[in-house]
Amino acid sequence: MSVILTNQSYGKSQVCLSYVTRRDGIHDFIQITVDVALEGDFHAAYLEGDNSNVVPTDTVKNTVYAIARIHGVESIESFAQHLAKHFCKTYPQVDSTTVSISQTLWTRVCRDGASHDHAFVGGSNERNTCRVVATNDSLLMHSGLLGLQVLKTTESGFVGFSKDQYTTLAETTDRIFATTITADWPCGDPTLDWTQIRDTVRGCLLDIFSNRYSPSVQKTLHEMAEAVLEECPQIDEIALKMPNQHHIPADIAKLGLENNNDIFVPSPEPFGVISATIRRVA
Image (cartoon, rainbow, N blue to C red):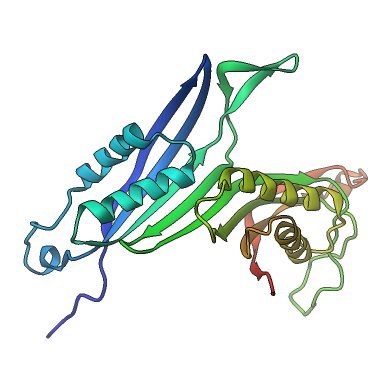
């Protein structure tokens, strides 16, 4: 029997880094988790046990902290670019480096309208994300967010859907709509301020979710994407994923009680999954 090695990559995952920037007594804090994947001339390690071209994954981990020391961590996008470029420029055997970063969100403590200089509050599952794929002569970047959990108690319905002998779902024009949004978009110009652009994207998503009636998750998803592309000329395409996280009216009629559309059972699973990619048309 003969076999062929069709593709290969390796790297380091879940490298955790916290970074403090101090400016005249004002501290900024960022916490990130970094994945690095290397592709290139590593075939001998797989085929012959020859590790001479292999950059140890421990070195990859150490490099994350070294690049933070050298370049700082102004944003996850800028840091991912510095890190990916380093591996391509430093090691001739590396053809491509993929750096994926997830940022844990911390916000300043505020009291009486004033932001604290160095105290922060966390607790949200929301994350900022980015992914950079670099070679010696190219760089592609995506930004995004995940874990943006939203819910509204009305202004949502679902009617007119296909029915057959297995359908038990009742139509409704007034239901709880809950989802956790994942968004991802390519960054045409990696040098732009994608932190600010992400804030604008997030605002668009929340505005449409909150202020428009939702006849379906699909329609709301599309309207969100349209709003982002309208507001952000720097973005030509956005992918959204929105699970339908059900809150089912509790059956309390058997208790001799009436449910006035105010008592629900959260149903974490199973759940519907709705996703789409929407692109700007020139």
